[in-house]
Structures are given as structure tokens and as C-alpha cells.
Image (cartoon, rainbow, N blue to C red; front, side):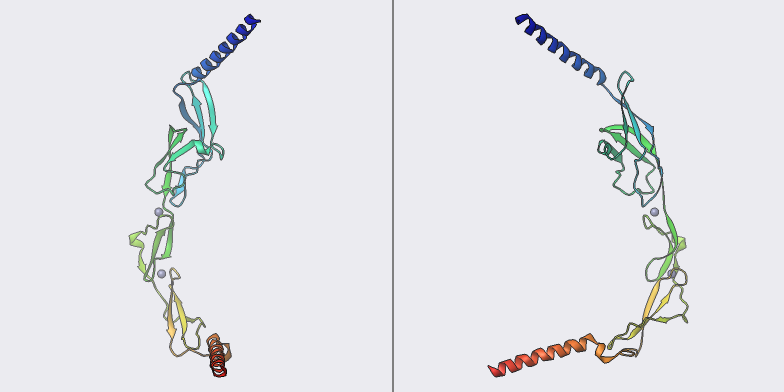
Length: 217
Ligand SMILES: [Zn+2]
Ligand SMILES: [Zn+2]
């Protein structure tokens, strides 16, 4: 009986040691290799790095493959990137460094380009070619807006006290400028439609109520 217990204890110890030795064999300096991906390496400067398609093979000191890690929602937390995936890429970025479990994997070359749009309004005076990502404007592309002075169109938004306005649009970028049409206030509109007149009547009613209330008292 005693011998049996001793034997089982011995067996347990041996098993424990063998598990430990297997673990220690597999441990040791791991090597990370980017074996696939990423799928996307060309970007505009309003986009963020997309790690989709990344596959990292982890090998131990004996060159045996320990693990193959496919980038996905479930493995994303093990990956780190520089610049970070949360950041919009800039044209200054030429590579994204990939890390797995804190260890460097590879530097992935990427190209990041401006996304230029022509004839964009740059405000009240000029239009030009501007990057939709970073907002950079090509200096030589800047020009003053141009309007056809015979092409003013009324907006029909006058009120009883405020003149109507009319708009003109830049022939190149469609930038809108407005001006008032003098003396157009109050035209085309029925008196009764004015909310402010209605409001005044309500206040007069209230005042009268107050005055009569005071007299009665
Ligand atoms: Zn840009
Ligand atoms: Zn313009």
C-alpha cells in the first residue's frame, strides 16, 4: 500500500517534470516572421492603416513553428502598429512597423498620397486645388473667384422688415456670394402671415388681462 502511494507520487513528479521540460524546450527566443499581407499598401492621406491579411509565423530557437497568427478581430489585441491604426496616415509615412505580443515583426512599406481635388472653394475670395486628406493647397493653383455679373438670382427670402437677397455663384468652384435687393422687404407677403404681428397681439392681450385684473382688485 505504502509502495503504491510512493510509486504514484513518483509518477506524478516525473509527469510534471516532463511537462516543464517540453514547455522549456518550446520557449526561448521566438522569431516573428511576416509570411503574408497586408493586402493594402497604397493609401490616401485621409485613410488609416488596414492590417487585414497579415499572417505572422512564430518560430522557436529550434526553428520549429510554434504558432501561426492570422490578423483578425480576435487576434487584433496582440498586434501593435507604428504609426497606430487609429491614426490617419500622412504622406510622410513610408512604412508601418508591425509588432506581435510586443515583439517586432516587420516594417511594411506603404505609399501614402495626397488626394487632390481641383477647383475647390478656399473661402470668400479664392478657389484652387486642395488635398481632401490634409488640406494642403497647391500654391500655383490658387485663383480669385470669377462671377458673371449678369447672373444674379433672387432667393425670395425677404421678410416684412428685411430685404430679399440674391445670389451669384463662382463660375469655376460654385462658391456663393449674396447681396441684398434694396427695397424688397415686405413684398409678396400677406400681413397676417407674420408671426411677429401675431406675437404682438398675444402680448397686448396679456397686458390687457393684467390691467383689467389690477382694476378689478
Ligand atoms: Zn494631403
Ligand atoms: Zn471660385
